[in-house]
Amino acid sequence: MIEVPAGPLLHALEQRQQAFRGLKAVASVEIQKWGTKRTLENVGIVLDGQNRLRMEAYGPLGQSIMTLVWDGKEVLLRRPDSDRIEHWGQEGFAQFLGEGLDGGELCALLAGNIPAMTQPNNAMQFCGRNGDCVLEIRHDSSLRRIRVVYSASGSPVEPQIISLELHRSGKLIYHARFAQAELIAHYLLPMKIEIENPDHNLVLTIEYNSEIGVNTPISDNDFMLSDGEPSK
Image (cartoon, helix red, strand yellow):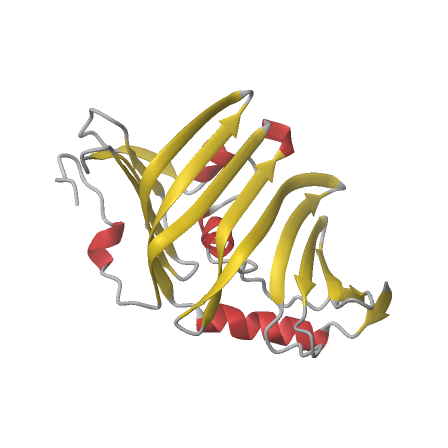
């Protein structure tokens, strides 16, 4: 690979972030952790950009069995067979998914985006002849490595993100992979997302089904959760 200017790719990824305002979808979610595996076949997912998130798992009869909400300030959880809401704070996702995955980061990955970053000036891009490129962004002790594939023409306008890694102090925090991209409402969305946290021996796989809307209207009520709240 040879080094090429990173500016055009950074601009294209920023445009992609701005083009995504939200998502409503149904997905299957598989969680593998320490040798055990659990699959939730019917999970409703609502994203408000990189600002808020709701994930609600449903049983075979359509009943709500678990709800997780990040309202931009803290993580709220309602477990099966309980109306009591657990408050997990701003760092709640770290307890589920491990270090490095806060709410905004997870929202970005579920949309096939890179997380919002301030002043990503320390960036380098390396490309091969086949259009496969790697963007490296460094900030303090962190390194993000983003692998993209350009279109056949080599245009940087709509690069497809294939994977994203976050390293801190030389340690791999997580590795996300994106596959089966489909164009929905003029937005290229990966239909399969796999997030691996090696330190926690965790692999989280999300596969969207055909019930999906991109940039559709979203209600503030989707990100509210209170004790005794009826299932949606």
